[in-house]
Length: 230
View 1 (tube, rainbow, N blue to C red):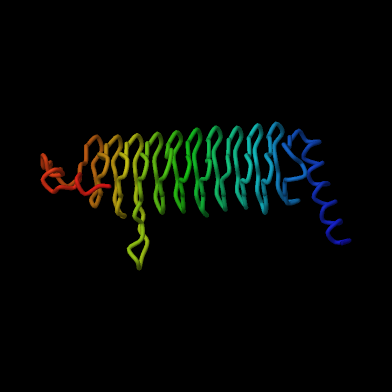
View 2: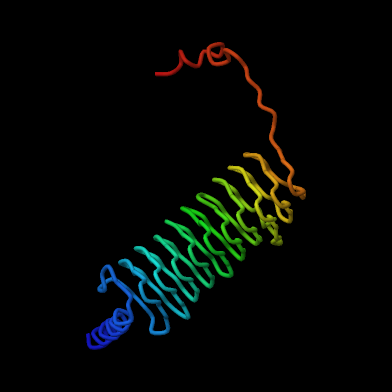
């Protein structure tokens, strides 16, 4: 019991130090901060947040509920909601989450968006790049102001080796696209939604890779499917 009380006292001592330095806690009883962590003034720490290792949080950030950050550097004015960040960096003005996962060696630029259920691993995102939801960015370099649509996957692993892809500044990757690494998408290029990219795409080009759609009028009634429904 003595050890538990001693640890609790130490935890509150750390939190008190941050409060004195201008950090706010939604609930100081539900925050877990290592002694090695640095937090800038004006930052708000939500409940059930864990900050550990050599983590540095900038000024005027919001670190929302259930976020876990380990050995990472978060710049000023960053908003993070219910996300996990490990061995990575996040630039100023960026929003992360909810439910995003930055795995080791992820480097996110300024004014980016890493949205819900986006996973980044061993990759970079340039300033102003956006991946709003349901996207996997693995072993890739994404340029400034790139837009990654919903369901984009960087296919970086063939079962034996991992490969790296590059998406240059201003490119637009449509929803539900697969980039089969290693490929390069040039500056300002557009990848049509639903495409699987298996070759380099030059800048300013439109790349479309879909099976041609086929319509069969009255197919449902001819099959008698409606009559079979209960």
